[in-house]
Length: 189
Image 1 (cartoon, one colour):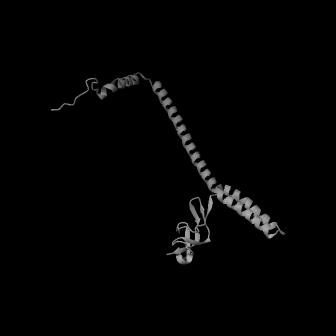
Image 2 (cartoon, rainbow, N blue to C red):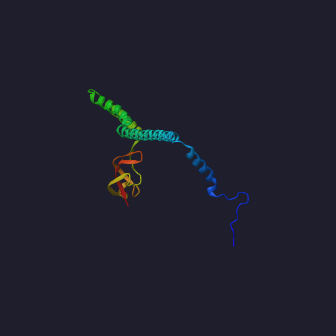
Image 3 (tube, rainbow, N blue to C red):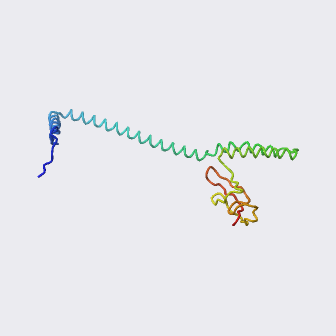
């Protein structure tokens, strides 16, 4: 018969041995306590409970205020998120209005003004992470391109099959998302 071995250094303790002196001390304290002492302890416990309840209410209110502020910040971000892009477009509108006000300008001056305005517009697009998709000669990508027509590869002037031959309308992308696919003609096999 196997008897479980016990550690010779640390004798086994019974759970009741460690709590007996504490229980005896509590019992002695209760017997010697008067009604006034118990009422004083009760009042102190109630005061601590009220204080903790106040702390709880403040924590709940703070959490609610934080949630409300976060919702307001999100609403403002949605409402004013385009602000920097709009700031970049305002000079373009100014340039176009100035071009319309010019009555006696030569064709060369008008062209120069339009080119300047186009550069301003492209700079605004770059700032807003709006990029054009101009896939001439690239492999057809259905995620970025929309095929309008197909031409035989022989008639495409050396463009390989399944590649873009002509761009009918440039596409646009915001960051990594396609805003509008490019309308293209594709070489067929």
